[in-house]
Every structure is written in C-alpha cells, then in structure tokens.
Image 1 (cartoon, rainbow, N blue to C red):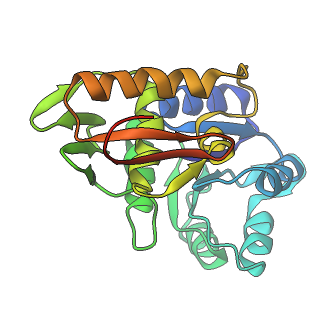
Image 2 (cartoon, one colour):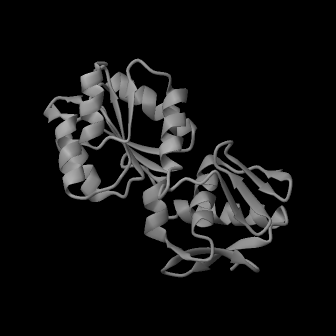
Length: 226
C-alpha cells in the first residue's frame, strides 16, 4: 500500500517512514501543505498520515479542502494536540483516526491496517487465488500449507496482483504502488521482480501464474506462465 506522510519534523518523518517500510508500505514523505497537495494530485495513495502543525498552515485546512472536493482517502491525524476539543475538530473535519504524539510505530501500523480493512478499504485480512494464500497481517504467503519465501518487493507485487486476480494490472499502476518518489528505479526493475516471483510460484507448485501482456501489464490467473 502507498501512503502519503505529511510531517515537517524530519527526525520523526524518518522514524515513521523506516518503520512503515519494514511493514511493506511504500511511503512518500512531505513537510508542507503545498507539497502534500502536489503529491495528492500526482500519485494514487491508499492512505494519508497528516500532522496538523505545518510550516505553511494548519493541516486541518488541508483536510477540510480535501473532503470538500469529495475525496475519500482515509486520513489518520498524527499530532501533539491532546485536548478533547482538538480531537473533535479533527474528526469533524474529516479525519478517520487520531493518534497522539509520542507514539509507538507498532500502534501506528496497527491503526493504518485497521483503517484499510474498513468497508470499501483496500486491505483484506486474507487473499486467496487458487492454492495460493496471502495473510496480509502476518505478511506471509503460502502455497497450500507451505510457506513461500519472497522478497518484500516481490511480496508487494504479488499482493497487488492477488487483489486484482483475473484482471490485467497495468505496469504503471504496479509501479505507482511499489515505488516512492525518491526511489532510484531502473527501467526493468519491475520486470525483474515479476520474473523472480514467477519462478518461485512455479517451483512451489502454485496453481496460479503470472501472465505478461506486452505493452499492457500483468495478469494473475490459473494456467501456465507466459
């Protein structure tokens, strides 16, 4: 899942990004309202983490404009404002959850996954395709009962394909979910992940495989790989 982190404290932003990336999230960090608005207009996000005390304004103003434009991206407010009135204002402005600083990144991760599991959210607890099962909480992939060892990027590729099993996933959609703005990505990086993942599935006896549609994207379905 791709997350936009709006936090101007560089030390805290780095702490959150590293923690979430270890949990297989792709995170773009920005430090102002202007940069947040630009990012939201540029990339498809699954969730936004929003600080309120930003150098160019109040994060609540960004949230109000965001909701006024009928945008339904889940938003978790991350702030040191601990008054009841502050929390009420945040929730009334359109926040889906509210976490006070200081916090443990483990709790933040759990709250994010809870938001993404809500109705119309993007994160199901368990994904299945053929004899392949993906536990999105434990971050484990199994073929039948056997654990399949894959890298984090391969796991993220597989997750996106399983969420759209039987449908073509365009290459640019996959890349937008897997890579942040500041990642150095080679031209064939995605293809390399797909190739390794396809071999692992085949060797493990998976009943599904990844098909390449040249110039279009990738498809996870029953049958031999191509």
